[in-house]
Image (cartoon, rainbow, N blue to C red; front, top):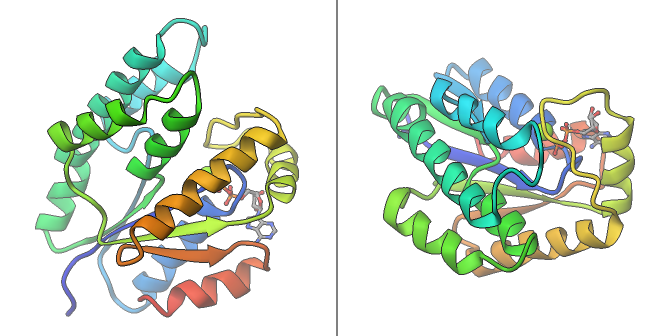
Length: 202
Ligand code: ADP
Ligand code: MG
């Protein structure tokens, strides 16, 4: 039995993270692995409450800095209550979005707060995934998918195409900065093609 792994899926909205994290979890389960599939923001009862505080209601309610503190608090709770206990129990954890999303989104919105994100991460989170799939794709197609989708489990942020391009480049930069952890996946293919490439990492 291989060592339990912490695996994350990242990429812009509509890139197929939820689809592929579900499919990879199912694939590992058919091989007999003990899996938990979780997501951010949220993933533990406390973090889900914080998610509601941040993602619903008046978008001006929190400053960019307070929002990062809330996301960091949510991630800390998710780590303490869901991720670490599962890993300690020998389970593999698959998480749909994690710290890379905060790095890219908070680094690109409402002023560049990337340094603050990194400082809070090293203080309060520290844990990096063992493996991260970054699904890269044409933002125009991702945007169409997102808009076609019914009310999703994700906040769908329609910031427009040029912003999606900025986010895409943020994810690409992370993939290039940490090639040991990050695997870049071409999302401009069918779900089956993508899932079979990812299945090779089982
Ligand atoms: P994300 O979680 O990254 O926002 P989803 O997995 O929810 O993306 O996919 C967004 C939408 O696109 C969903 O309706 C999903 O069924 C569809 N979809 C996902 N992957 C593909 C793909 N490879 N080709 C076409 N449509 C896809
Ligand atoms: Mg999703």
